[in-house]
Image (cartoon, rainbow, N blue to C red; front, side, top):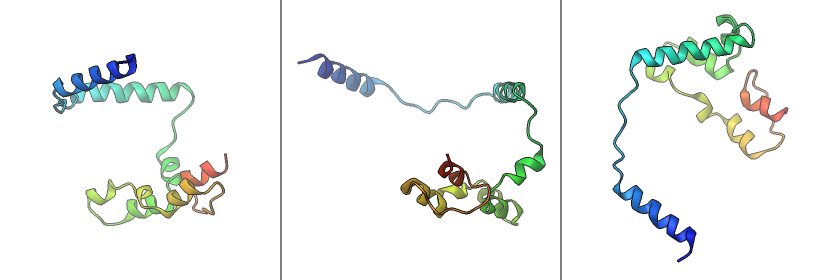
Length: 110
């Protein structure tokens, strides 16, 4: 048995013996402190974007979801997961994507 096989067997045994229980969620104060620190770190490189700038940076589908009278569950949906622009960008080097503020359009231009 070579070292690779030995390591593989060891990790398989370790995985079988380990119990993979869901970890309890992080406490809210910890999440809040982490978020505050992330914002502080981000602001060190310059001012943060205004809310108007953030909203202006949304793609046409994100804007449609924001203004729609739909429930929270729909508003939490990631439209990129079903957008044709994502599919095109993942399969073509110079995909014909013309949506404003689409991150996949930006990837095509780099």
